[in-house]
Length: 202
Image (cartoon, rainbow, N blue to C red):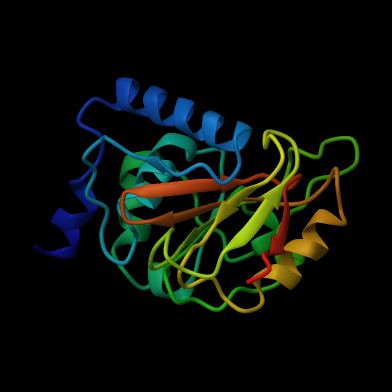
């Protein structure tokens, strides 16, 4: 499939219905951090953008939301695909991005380089969508905070070594800070900035 065809296909079959259902899943995911959600709409984003990440992009991005892409995504058909299906402008400035997407295996830059909102408008921040190898089967991490009864766990595979330090720095900014969705294939989980993440005792 040529780049052109790839950019023009693979969107939502029923945009309004699918976007609404995914938006609800994202809201549920943010309300219940660490809960794995599986996207149903059959979208086919260009590699290396995963299905869940592509679905989130189609749901949240529009011509008012500047998007930052990691290098591997920027060099693929993803910019054209996003532009065609969402109209979202790309930015190379992390601090300008409303949404940022990274493909699996990418080293994470400091979350502090992205928009963290202001004290008055903490929602004017970047949401990071980070693709991983898997959302289960890795080192177990404990999650605590709003939306979690006492403690829940996640065990993603491929979370960069620097993630825990970056997340701790991010939580210290509250109410400012970034929110994150971890994706793998058709699945995602949300980590709002209020979530405390600690390594569990083996």
